[in-house]
Length: 231
Image (cartoon, rainbow, N blue to C red; front, side):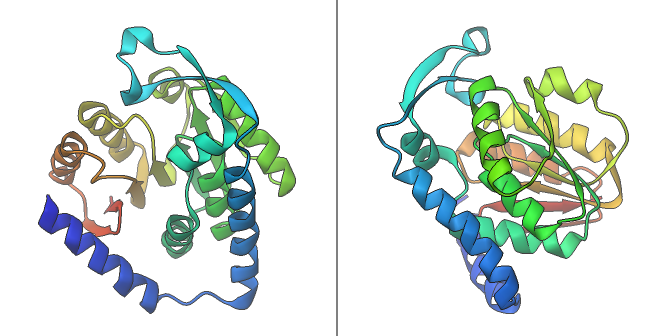
């Protein structure tokens, strides 16, 4: 895993150098970065947030904790360096219909929207508190995605059609990761992309990534923390 992580880091630097961002695009990205930095400073604004995913056993999902907004952002929101990388990857796809699994406070969603301003973006978040917070941030940018509140297992069966791009950024357990990535394969258009975040999060996650990679994908690559698969 250490060798593959190093390859991912090297591919990240090569990709960033090879991809150009115009001054207009950079101004959009800087606005999202400014929001991220402002939220990072919100250390005295506390939220009661429901926990899901690998943080707890499933029987305890929904347990609430008090945490500052700044702590939430520091722990799991998309930082500017990763957001710019996500922007470039999404821009490359030219997707018109996008599904994000794991909204959190909406920073990653804003990068997807900036990359694909004409796309219909759907996003799923299990925590009602985080979903409500993300909608506040979307309104700041005049952005109104299709938001679903519920676990992935609750929401995915209700979604119709196929997707050009699926961004998987939630439930960091290897078995769950494999389950949702396998679902994604069946719900992507031919040529559609699955972008998986945090594939080096843990040995368990990395093993899930290796299992997913054995499916019948047309192309696959790793750029930084992202595993990218094309149907």
